[in-house]
Length: 300
Length: 292
Image 1 (tube, helix red, strand yellow):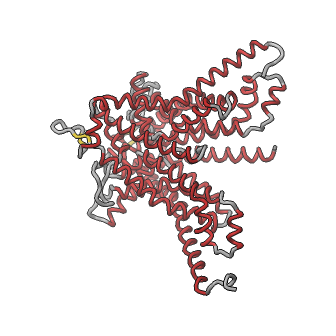
Image 2: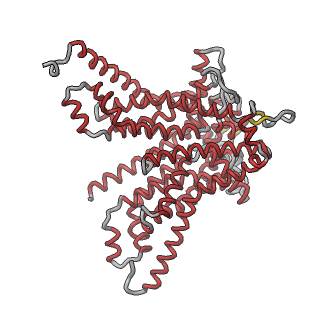
C-alpha cells in the first residue's frame, strides 16, 4: 500500500509501525516461554542438588523441620488428582443433563436466560466460591458426618465441581447444537422416541465436543488455588476416605511461598513447574485434537 | 409386518426413559439456575448487615474484623490501572500484527498464537510465582501495586488478544482494499479505519479482562502483597479486595461476616462489569445487523 507522493516517508512509517507491532507480538508470544524459564531458574537449586529424588521418594512433606526435613510431594499430587477427578465426576453428569434439557426439553425462551446465568456463574471469583464453600458446604458435611472436620476431599470436589459446572454445560450445549439436524430427523423418521434419540444419536455425536469441555475444565480445576485452599483442610496426606482432609499442589504453593527459604522455595517452584507442564500438555493435546481453542470458555 | 408394529412391551421404556431424562435434566438445569441465587443469598445474609457508607470509605481495623475497605478499593483500582496500562498496548498490538501484517498460516503467526494459547492455560498461582521473581526481584519492584498489576496483565493478555483478533477478523473484507485504493498507508488505514471499526470488540475484550483481573487472588498474594494502608505510590504494597476475602476467610478467626461483606461487594462489581460487556456486545450485534 503506497501513495503516489511521499512514498519513501510513508513506507518508512509503515516499516516502523510493523516493527513495533511485531515486537509487541513477539513479547506476547514469548511470555509463556519466559514464565517457564523463570520457573526453571527458581527450581534449579533443587534440581541441581538432586532433591527431585526425595521429591518423589520421601513419604512426608515437612520442609521446615530442622531435624528431619522431608520433601515428599506424592501426597499432594494424589490430592490434586483426586479432587480434580471428583469434581469432574460430579459436574459431568449434571452438566450434560442440563445441556440435554435445554436442547431437547426446555422451551426456547429459556435458552437466553440459561446462557446468561451460566456466564454469570463463570464470572464468580474463585475466592468467593471458596468462601461460600467454607461457610455453607463445609458445615453441611459436618452435619451429615459429625466426626469429620468438614474440610475435606469431598468439600473440595463439590466446590470445584460447581465451579466447572457452567464450563461443562456450555461446551456440551454447543456440542449438542452442532449435531447435524439430518441425523435427528432420520431418527424421528425411524420412529425413535426422544429419549432413544438423545441416548443413541445425539450424545454419541456430541461426544467429541463434550470431551473438549471436560479437558478444558480439567485444566482449570487442576490449576485452581483459591477454591481448594479454603475448603480442603490443607493436611498433606493420602486420603483414605472422602472425608479426609487433603492438600493439593496449588494450595501448598499459596500457603508456604510467603515464608519459604532457599531449598524449600526451590521445591515450591518445582511444584509450579509440574503444574504448568501438566496444564500445557492438556491444552496442547486439546489444540492437537481441534485446531483453534475457543477463547470464550478457555479462561482458566 | 413386525417392523411396523413394535412389541407392546417396548412401548413402556421410551416413555419412562423420556420422563427420567426430562426429570434429571430439569433438576440439573435448576441446580445451575439456583446455584447463583444460592451463593448470592448466603453472601447477602451474612454480609449485607455490615454494609454502610463507612464500610466503603473506612480503614481496615482489627485485621479486618471491624472498619471498612476504603484502602483496598483504592489498591484494587490502582492494580487495575497498571494492568490495563500494559495489557492494552501489548494485546491490541499483538492482535494487529497477527491480523494485518502476517498471513494466518505463516510459521511466525502460528508460533505467536500458540504461545498466547499456552499462556491462557497457565494456572494463576504460577503467574504469582513468575510475577514475584520477574517483576518483584529481577526488575526490583518488590511487593508493589505495580508488580501486581503487571502480573495480572500477563494473565489477561490472551483474553484481549483473542477478542481483538476476532473483532479485526470480523470486519467487512472490503475495508482493506478500499483503504488501499484511497492511497492510505497501512499505518493510516489501521489508525483511522480498522481500529475505530474494531473498537467495540476491543472494548468488550477489555471489559472481560477487567472482570478476570478483579476476581483474581492467587496471582496477587506474592506480587502486590498484604498491606492494608492507603497506597501513596504505585511502589507501595496494596491488598486487593479479593486477597482481603482470602485473608479473612483463612487467617482471621471471626472474620466470616466481614469476609461475606467484601465478597458481596466484589461480586457486585464483577456483575456490573460483566453486564456492561454483555450489554455492549448485544448493542454492537444489533447495530451490525441493522447496517449490513
